[in-house]
Amino acid sequence: TTLAPTAEEETHGSPGQAEETQLAGSNYIDIPAWIMDVTEEVSAFIKESRYTDATDLILKAKSEVADILAMHEQPPVVATPTPLRNNNNNNNRDRKSDAKNETNPGPSPPKKLHKKQQAILQRTNIQLDALIDRMSKRLSENLRRKNEALKASAKRERSDPLSALAPLASPVCLNDDAVALNLLVKLGKNQEAATAYAARRSLLLSECLYERPISSPVGMDAVIYAAQLSSSFFSSLALAVDGFLDLFIDADTGKGADDDTLNSRSIFMGNGEKRIPSGALSAVVLWCDSELAKFANVFGSSRLLGSLSLSPFNLRRQEDKPEDKSFEVAAKCVDQAFLFAAENLDSIGLPLTPKLAELIRPRLKGCEGDIAGYLDPRWKALTFEWNLGNDRRSSGRVAARRVIPAAVDDRRV
Image 1 (cartoon, rainbow, N blue to C red):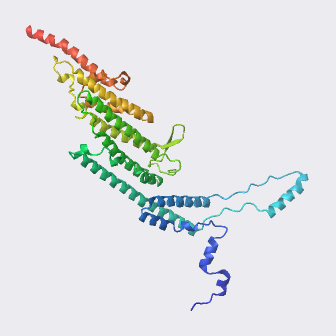
Image 2: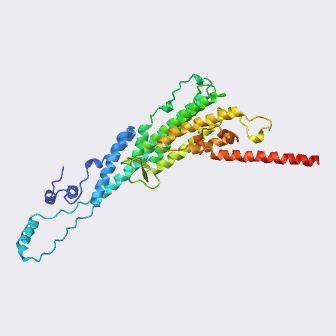
C-alpha cells in the first residue's frame, strides 16, 4: 500500500523535486545531463582500448566544464548612471525615457552555480584527470614495450651470421606509433610523448648506422661507404627532427601547461605560422647531440676510419714518408660527413656540423692537422683548431732540428 500525498506535497511537490526545480530555476546555470555520466563512458572506452574516442570525450567534457565555471565566475554587470540634465526643455524627453526603463528593465543578473553544482563539476574534473593519467600510462607502456621488442629483434638479427640474407626493410621504419603519440600530446603528456618518439627514432638511426655497405670499405672504397653511411644517417635524422617538431606544433593544446612541461613556452618560427614549444626545441637538440655521438663512434671505428693506417707525428720515424694516401682517404670520408650533415640539417635550421667536427676530431688519432690540409676549403672554419695543432707540431719539429745538432756537437767536444 502507498500513502496518499499530503496537501503540502500536492502543492509544492516532494523535497527532491523541489530541489531540482530550484536548481533548474532561472537564477542557476543549467548543466548538460551528459556531464553527469561522462566519467563512466570514458572508463568504458578505456576498458575497450578505444583511446581515440576516450580522448575526444575527455577534451569535450573538460572544455564544457571550463566554460560553465567561467560563466559562473563572470562578474555582474554594473549599470552606468545617466548624467543629470539642467535643461528644462528636456524634461518631457526624460520622462519618456524613464517610462521606457520601467517597461523595459535592464539586463538580468548573470546566472550562478549552486553549491551542489559546483561540487559536481569539481568532482568531475578530478575524475577526468585521474582517467587521463590512467590512459596516458597505458599508452606510454604500450609504446615502451613495442620499442623494447623492436630493439631486441634488431640485436638478434645483427648477431645472426645469416643477417646478410635478411630483407633491407626493418619494422622499425613503420610509423605505427603516430596515433598513440598524438593522443599523448592532446592529453598534455608531452614528456611521455617526447620520450617514446625519441626511443623509436633512435632505433631507426641505429638501423642506418648498421646498414650493410654497398662495397667493401677498403682503400678508396671507404669513401663510398662514408657517403652511404652519412647520407642514410643525416637524411633520417632530418626527417626525425621534422616529425618531432610537427608533433609538438600546437595551436590549441597546451595553453594552460605548467612551466615544467614541453608546452610551457613557445617560439614562433618562420613567418609566425609554426608555434614550436621551447622545451621541445631543447629536447630535440639534446637528442641530436646524443645521436651525433653514436654516429661519430661508428664513423671512427674499425668499420671506417679505424681501418686506415693513420698515425700521429710523434709515433712515426723521421725517415718514413707521411702516409699521404691514408690522409687523403680520411679527408674525403670526413668531407662526405660534413657535406651530408650540412645539406640535411642546415636546411631545417639545425646547424650541427660544428658539433660533428668536434666529435670526429678525437677519432683521427692525432692526425687532424694533416687531414685538414686535404679537406675542402669551405670547411676551414670547422677545422681551424685542427690546423692549430698541426702548427704546434711543425714548430716542435723545427725546434728538434735545431737542438739535436747542438747536442751532438757537445758530445764531440
